[in-house]
Image 1: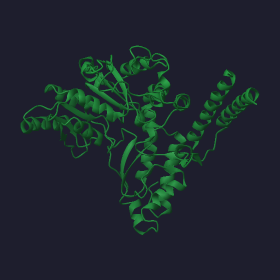
Image 2 (image 1 turned 90 degrees about the vertical axis):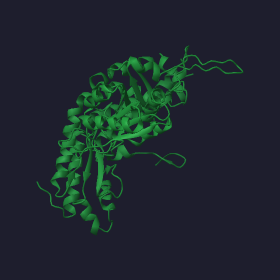
Image 3 (image 1 turned 90 degrees about the horizontal axis):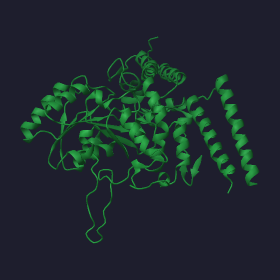
Image 4 (image 1 turned 30 degrees about the vertical axis):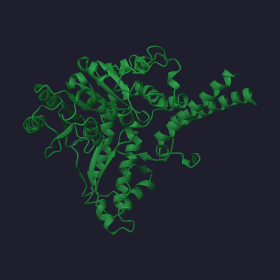
Length: 59
Length: 393
């Protein structure tokens, strides 16, 4: 059992959910402000980190 | 894009500004979406269900606390979550109404209130609305008197909507409850368009039952809702089972009959719970929601011939509008007929208006950002100008 992989899976889905909500709040044009872009960048960086963990644990 | 087999991935709220009159208050918060991911399996909330084996006693996840918090938030004594407001109506009818009893509702009542009354074999009697589309205490009193005369007994229950689904108008609930109570008639407050959207106190309203809709106004998955009541009626509405199997002698503990034992499981209750902290916060920002709504109302009223059929100034984000003298005039000669309007809205990323509607229709601005409100207002004006309608700047 890899608790680390399972946590990384859920964490990545949760982070992607935050991005989903950003899309909703910026619909329909999805033109993000500088602040929103910064937030999106942070979220994407965190998602990548979680995907890296999944790769480390599973592959 | 498909999410499974022939099932399309629904992306309405990611790609457009949704103004569907019934959908906007039920859109999930990020936390509710996360809860849905984690609790999608059928009996997911039952991992730690221990004696006395009832949903509202489960401590992990904190469903028991959630029930207590809901009751206290609504300033009522007891609350249960149910699969939609309609099941709340039904539970109250099941406890309070006998076959053949007259039950009062209103000319603006939702069809599910009628269904709840019919489900127990009772007889619906409507309070008429006045010329301004309001249900008044005077009309309630006249209806009660009429029912007593014609049916030979007092109504067993009175339903009234805090805000009705047809016009989004507020009604004098305190006044109506006072009248009903003077005849000893308990009052059910239908908060499908208020609970989770704006502050509601059952105690301040003076009602005996508060019904809320999770999927309509509490940012929760469907079907979800709540029924709250006072200490006086909790024992009746939430009566526990008393039957015994005649062959096996089995009994069923403290399962509640009107709740069919346990009610909301899995994603519905967990989504509702996850959104609840945000819901408690958002009801306090109701004035901001009305301000955003005004931006759009002002734009629509600037289009010559357009009329708002709901109360003005608006006291709710759900609005009924008459565009027979504006957008419907365009539809008369447009090659797409009535579909030109929703087609134009769709191209600009506005969803939720019934396709083909150009006469009398409804929309709801709840939950959009300020930027989205400004954009929506500009879209209505652009469509009007593009189609030769006069716009008063």
